[in-house]
Amino acid sequence: MIKQEPDNGQPTPDTVSLTIRAWRQARGEDHGHFEVYEVGNVPVDASFLEMLDILNEDLVSRGRDPIAFESDCREGICGTCGIVVDGLPHGPGHCTTCQLQIRDFEDGATITIEPFATGAFPVIKDLMVDRSALDRIIQAGGYVTVHSGPKPDPNSIPIEHDVVEDALDASACIGCGACVAACPNGSSSLFTSAKIGHLGLLPQGQPEREDRVRKMVEAMDEEGFGSCRNYAECQASCPKEISIKYIGRMNADYIKATISGGDRRGDMHAT
Image 1 (cartoon, rainbow, N blue to C red):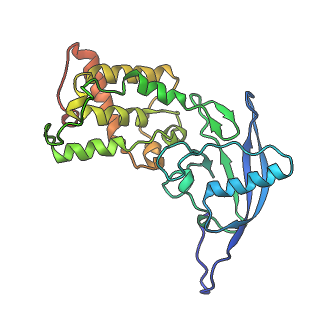
Image 2: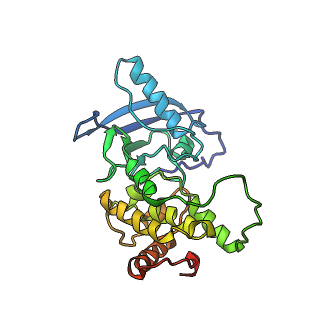
Image 3: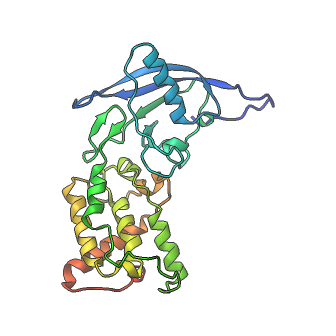
């Protein structure tokens, strides 16, 4: 499906035509179906979501129901967008759906789009799913209780550079849910471990470290997410390239938290 540049040196066309096979599911319905649409005159420099905007404008002009999908920043920052494109969460390119470009597809291609639907992500309508289960996992323990008054001197709490970089890598998670959609078991372990990991690595996150990992892992299980089997599909589909090493750290911290019975304040990166 990735578009190849022509060998004859001629410029690519300014527009392309596509066939879109889209999942349609009415709000509140348990079952959906695919519908096929033809969309032409799509600028090659348009984004994937702009192509859907063009398709929806055509549907509305003909008195038909537009395809429901989510988006906000459209810059790969907020994590609001999320569509399975040709079987890949967010589509090809290792980026969010909003950063996917039409130039990445061949003229005349047939593209199948589906929602991030799993047992814990029920479909709201069409391509929109309810991802509030991820919010409830964070609410269970994804916070720190240190004083949040005036901004402290950045050098007041010395932290090793490698630890800072490790914490920043984990905090890059935008909560889009691609890891859940990619996992054959529908596990949210990569998301949960990233949210646990970036706090557990820093001194500010130590006071409630044990409570955090217990509460967030238990909340993850209560929400109905599947168990991790180390398929690593989550890592492969994450637009922020979060490593599965955080899952291992989360599991180690959880075991230690459940058997220690005390306040363990060691650095997470040392486990």
